Length: 466
Image (cartoon, rainbow, N blue to C red; front, top):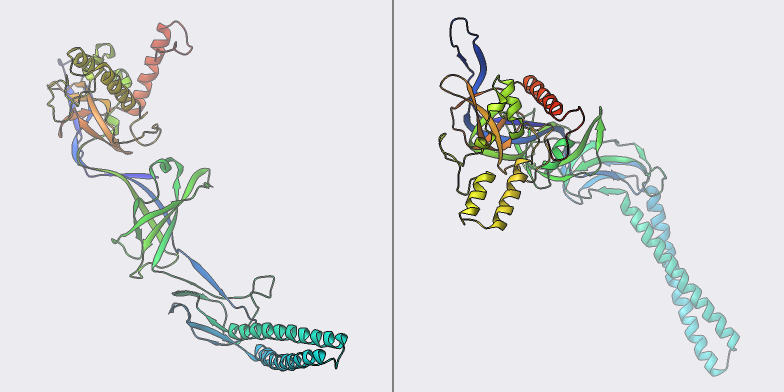
């Protein structure tokens, strides 16, 4: 779930106006535009774990005579971890060595006999059949020597297997056996053998988190993340998204995706199994004008918002609500300049020859795309947007000198659950009216009914009429 942090100060001011002693007093809930920092983040919780964990097993079976490491010990590749009783494999080694010596002697004897028979055959002393018999004996001796050499090499490997060494550099996490325990071979047992201990390299750790699917469109591998653990309050660790797994996980009817964040743990502070809170920075706007989301409405909702505030929606001039360029004052209109985002001003510029017809089409398309990119203010329920920093038009209701709200067109950009960034059209400290969600929804429903009755039915609007 995303948590939005905004550095701002919000002041609530109540404006009232009256026309006489018996006239009703209109009261509006108001606030002020402030300046601060808008940070858009995705937050999740997870568990710190090693990137790679190794189960150490033995290729040989038997009784453990010595254990040389304990939990928490750091080892390097090749460090002696344990030694098994070598009697059985030592006996097999000795027998294989003796068989090898006999095979070598038999081989030398058979070779010598073969060479003599070659000379005797040439002298006509022995027959061809006797020579072939000696040749067969020589071949059998060669095969016996090969088998003896293979058995000796295997016995030598098995003798080395009784000494168990570290496969990589790391830290011993668990130790499952003690001296005197009888273990099973990993290569000769269908169950995979006995796990002596587990170890892992802890210089780099990772946090496996589950992030809500609504936030996945903003995340990608390589984004930076901030990780905090309860063991070190007030301290954060910097991480990076390693990958986003493609298979979703559903928990309590909520669809989430596993996100893996890697951390540098060269100082050894992070331990496997720690609970971690992860904050992934998606976007940030510094020193910008901010307004609460309940003060901003889309252009098409301006009439309904006016009705919710007790104003006459028919009196609103929608053409006057075009956004002002950044830096313009309240009284300045956005008739031109690169910041203009109004179709009327664009057509006027084309008629004056400032832009071509093709440029008009391109700017109009960009304007429509920005205006319709998001379907709401607040992260929930909004439509996808290619770039959340793209400016788009909106409307707020500014309190005038009489304490009454007046609609004003503004340009907005980033927004979170609570606040929206104002790009242009509104200055810091301007007092604006808050629009209740229930009142706005009721006004929208009433406006919809009026439009339906105007078209003579309760069905959907004709094509192109919204």
